[in-house]
Amino acid sequence: MFRLIKTEGAARRGELITPHGTVQTPAFMNVATCGAIKGAVSALDLKNLKCQVQLCNTYHLHLRPGDETVRTLGGLQKFTKWDGPILTDSGGFQVFSLAKLRNITEKGVTFASHIDGHRIFMGPEESMQIQSNLASTIAMAFDECVKNPAEYDYAKASCERTVRWLYRSKAEMDRLNSLPDTINPKQMLFGINQGSTYEDLRVECMKQIRKLDLDGYAIGGLAVGESAESMYHIIETVEPEMPKDKPRYLMGVGTPVNILESVKRGVDMFDCVMPSRNARHGHVFTWSGCRNMFNAKYKLDELPLDTECDCPTCQNFSRAYIHHLFKSSEMLGMRLCVMHNIYFYNSLLEKIRQALDENRYSDFYNEQILKIGQRI
RNA sequence: GGAGGAGUUCCAGAGCGGUCAAAUGGGACAGACUGUAAAUCUGCUGCCUUACGGCUUCGAUGGUUCGAAUCCAUCCUCCUCCA
Image 1 (tube, rainbow, N blue to C red):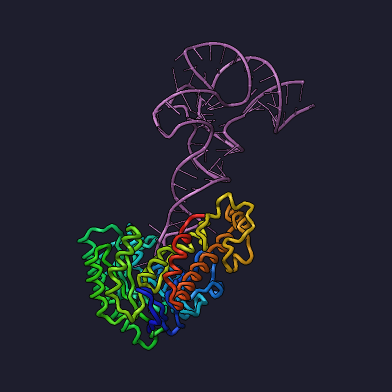
Image 2: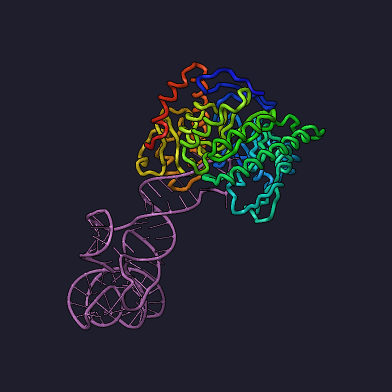
């Protein structure tokens, strides 16, 4: 269940109570698509990186090692050694990202596996069954994430189908949770708002899906081609239609600036591959802006990545060393930067929560918004 | 001493008369990355110019030719094999 603690403008401070622990919101969820944060970071590391929630992917884990395998091994928590809350994405994003490898019908989506090309079918029921086997804390409804810009007619048809899929997802989840041998019979379900950049579609979709008394509501289909301003506008459009007593999750977003802007507009939860992927590519986030650790200017720089950071990386290693590790393709460089960026994102959300607790989010926002996004 | 082979832009290495400022790797330098097909991808790497374009390059010097990294001569430097 979700408890709204306080608000400041549209921004919200709350907590999501789950069978696997309570999540303080606003929260960032750390993306471990295949059951691990890419960059050789384990659940044990996450404990030291202020992580509250791990996010894993239905599609990827269904392909490998197979959701039945995970089920046999006791579910994702036991498998990955992460005993906190886990959110599983439904595979809906792969309908977008694997566009060249899939075919959509009312029943569901047929994918060509990105691993070996074999055909796999996933509809709402299949997605719920897989997520039930994975035994995540929160399952996401199976949706279609449409690329922006999208034709109005297509966006409308897709959005309406996603709503029908949500009803089927909910029915299947209820059935699975009632079975005697389900690992997590209290698995929660979040519905997903779609509608591309069209206000009327977004609002109508939200009205439809809020009729189901779900555990949370996500805004999907953003940061997939439209401008940041357009994304913020859609959030502002949808937010008034979202239940106040349920968590709001903006899927796949985003940059530190995106997060500051979205919290301001009433979003409670985020996830994004950016901290981990960018870290693997040598791009680190700091409280004074972002750095590319490949840059020659770090060759003799003995300071930590961020002088204001107390993550394990910044407590021990210099920019010069990390620069060298990247130039030498040593994977330790990636690991150290992934840990730093994950810690940075989780710290950012922690500071946001503190600011909200003290009714000074507006000041915090003004303080951070300019410097946090710049390149240094 | 004798017989061969080679010297190309930061490195390795193609090119063997014009379409060559010179393939391809690597390195260097920079950029991108938003519910992860990503330890990935892109750009750039002689000088001048915003560009068009111009200029100087392929061990050195001289020559043949309308034209040379490519052909010839000499020189320098390296490598292999035989004494």
